[in-house]
Length: 115
Image 1: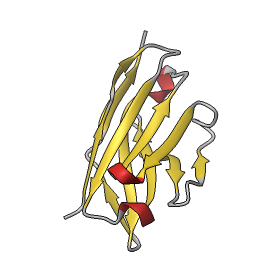
Image 2: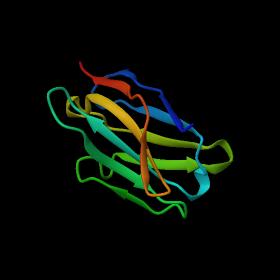
Image 3: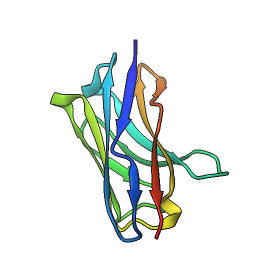
């Protein structure tokens, strides 16, 4: 079965940093598009970043210049380095994989940015 497990969430102060990880199993990771989404309190889920198998990255305007998505194919893991955090970054962050034209989701990890 497909499993995506996020980790690394927690509490950060404005201007701080967090690094999220997502470990994948049940997919051929090296040929899968991997993405991060987030859902702020009371809001719908929104896409934040994507990385393709050839390491092409694309970012939503809301995180561009502050967040970096990367992948380690040897470890079947995708990362999201989040810098210059602000309270608007607060929410549940979800790992997403696209494999065989199907979308798979992790359980989410909470990120809270507060002073």
